[in-house]
Image (cartoon, rainbow, N blue to C red; front, side, top):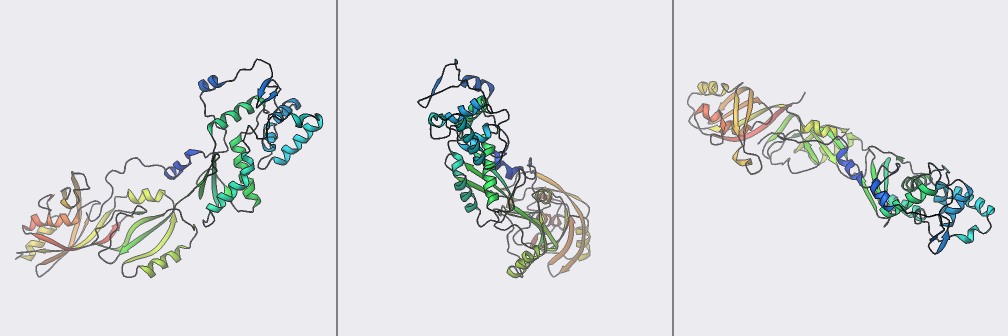
Length: 432
């Protein structure tokens, strides 16, 4: 098949959906998450009868009022919350590094109760398990992973163990101030703040980021995905013997066989560049690189940056194409009569069964295609050359040699002479 498009492209994802599927494992991190159903919450609800409760070997009054009441603040201090968590559950709305605010709240509480510090039940925070202490480490890992990558926008997420999220939510809901900030959002914003302190010109966004970062809150593993970039242009293949298939990052408007040239204004394409290290290269420089490294093989006049949406536009196009084909036809005695026979195919609808040469990868079916026009028929010895324009998806070689009768009618059938294709060129792709 010299030039074709997918017959059934299926359901397409929206422009960014396919890449954004990566985000399903813990992004959108500034929103509160409720990972339990109501029935699960009811089953796991802990009942207290009003008596004191033994927490990590110490007696804690679980009937304390919620923050920001002084007794509520004293209670969460007793169970061991860190300064970051103290600031957010007490109702302090400071974002980012809240340790200073938490320290101030703690000092005020100690001044009200001189024995409060000695009543702290444990030395690790039950709300975050001291994860805020790892902010510096996390930021170093993230920036290390991206040290060679050019980017301006980032989407950041963190995955926390379910049991930690549930326990944090239970304690914060019972003893935190109304509207107190949830753990995941607080950690992410603390990371944002730390990156900002390092004077990194990074904008944190929720849609279409240059890079997406996901941190595992248990292992501190950092996973980075870099958003691909896309270049649109038209290529001319001026030499035979160059394949255009089996390159998943190259999206062409159809394709030509390895032995077929593509001339004229060229074939539209979109080049998808995955995990790019640079995102803002001058397109003129890229064109120059093609010209320098592919001289005599491939030509590109201009390139432009585009989005993934352009891939669908290119792949789904059904543009007519103009070809020049040269073939051998033995036993032609009357050239005028032969020309009339060939021109009789102009404007006709032809039926083409799946060619033998592609039957191993193409569905067995009959395709109806229109031959829009045929002209410039010329004869030289036992060879014939002609120009034809036809509908997208036409098997042009088979239109000439009939593929043992699988294409009807064909040049071979109207000439009543065996035809053998010598070469084929794509002259123009009419996508305007």
